[in-house]
Image (cartoon, rainbow, N blue to C red; front, side):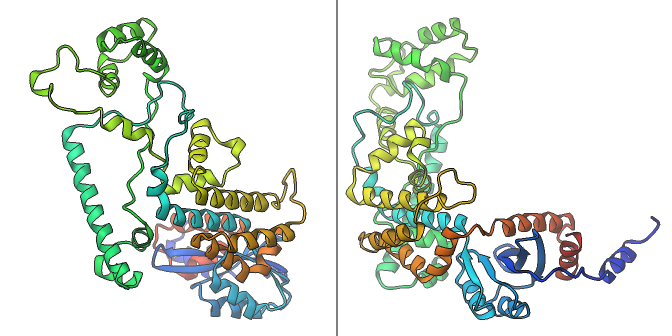
Length: 426
């Protein structure tokens, strides 16, 4: 087609919008015009699975005005945003509001993360279980020891984070708000909240190492070490005969961190130094990070791998942690049991929710009590999420499609053209 781009854009802008059927079930969600700065609102017809409109902001006034022009709406599915809750109440007062089940699970996990960020240092001091950490014998718990320069850089980074933590805690205990602390320190809002509520400095979790070609032979190496052989070259020759194709340096690094005595050919200047033995035992008592541990605590116990189940069992040795983990797992099982297509639907979900709220309000853990108070404030929508099939999944999918259309225009299209492309393509 021999036409200029301006002609095509002019024709697209001149196309009339389709006249959709009057929607009865609507999903509402926000989308990023410019992430972190400007956001809009997407409204979706959940029955016909197509977008209805795009709004240039996510204010409650705009959404309420849009809903008032469509009095036939009977159901409004949304996330846990209080702005959208007020908009749905003002714009469609007779409609049933439904909280999205996925966001309920996400909010539960965020509440766990806030509690764990405060209590993680105390949980790390719990003794390891007699059965170990549930890992196969000889499995590496962390990567090989890094060089001196990398260790020094890591120490400098920790010192800077520790100084920032102490500054945030000093200001927070002096009565400054999180907003004021952010303006004074320049730290991110999430970092300030984590430091302000943490009882002690939150150490970074040790990342699990990537797979290594040495892993299939670690059990043999550990067995030979238990027999008293710490000769790395001899161990390398043995695993090489079994099919190991790596170099002897991998075996040397593995054995060096577990020696009970210096190697025969250790240089004299290193004989008096305790280089690595103090690094290895400390990793045995490490817990997953608060974010990782929060994810493990909301998973079904039967679905956890052995090392994750061992970490959860160790955390439950703490009385407060056992209460929190029990409440979190019960809530997630309740929500999952009310999802569409669940094999075993949860009986009497509203009654079980009331029982859970009563226990959560009296559990003595601030993060869980705050989460329960938020659920009570949004009680009608939460109960509708447990008793109706509607959710905001369609809106999330349409936002993914909107992002694809937006990126095909390389960020050069205005809101008007983006709105036309999204609605006309539907």
